[in-house]
Length: 180
Image (cartoon, rainbow, N blue to C red; front, side, top):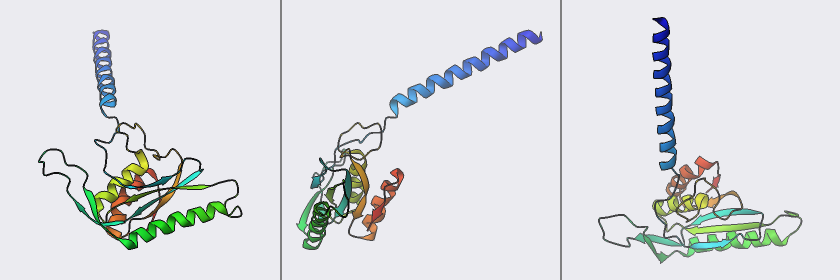
């Protein structure tokens, strides 16, 4: 009698274990980390022949406009209204990185690249560019990584505390620092 109960318990345990394993495998196949769509971002990238990359988010434009009136899937908004101050910040970052690379006494045997996005003074754009810093624009990326393929040192800017906080929440998931 005890032997029959043990067999039934073992069969029940094995059945439950197999069901849980099959469900976990099914969930893993359907839970691939990916971007649902491409973002409409503008910016500058110079990272190909460099060892490290510094990211930048600057409000080169000062407002966003919707790209469609559709009630279906939302699209990434467009930017308009040139912001000279944000443009100056961006050009200062590019100039500084070039100066550091030209001086061999600062980073001997290493060079810096940059990846800069226009956040249009918008939290939406700040969050979009933070995602692109980590994953790139390709729709299927199974792991978080820098989209340039280089080591991302950190992110400079966002141009305001609201935008910086929105982007920082995403960047901190991957231990990327942001200086604003």
